[in-house]
Image (cartoon, rainbow, N blue to C red):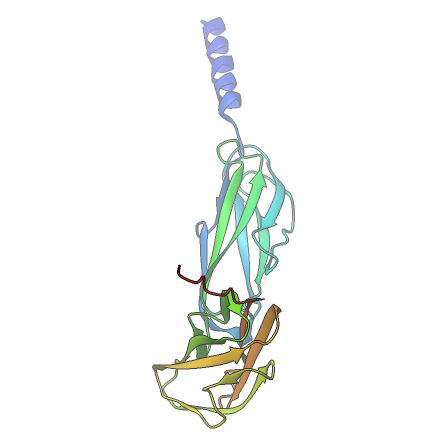
Length: 237
């Protein structure tokens, strides 16, 4: 009887040892939402707890942000069962506009999920945005022909915003945006940049706008493309 009890105890111990393992849990879930913030509040920061809910030591082998705009040092790389490590997240959003999502890969000795991903989300607010985006590209631009870049400026506030000044390069370019242009509240307005290139090469242009809204900052859009010789039309026989 005593032998059977002892044997059973060893069996139970063996089973427990077999299934003992570390287990990573991100407190609050795998998605962290900063909400809506002005680009001026960059960088956004948060402390994320990485908890070991298993029954063996959790080893944090690597923490790898998906891009250079995110940093995420962790205060320790070994976590006892029931304890946690703190991931100090910093997200640089100064160059972004609208909804963004960034990821951090956390590699551990958790056998059920060696790679766990934390997703950082936020909405970066600006009073004035460029649509469809701040980069206007043309695959090819013929020499000697006028090229037109079209874009929209959207005032996302409840008050009119005035263009106080602008800087456009190169000098050959002209734009329909003028000093004194008024952007109506909660509206999109379409504008153009026109340019005729005289030589082959690369066009790298920019339009920088300053407004009377102190929260808008510099509004910069870029237009570019490869300038090529215009191929003559084939004569019909």
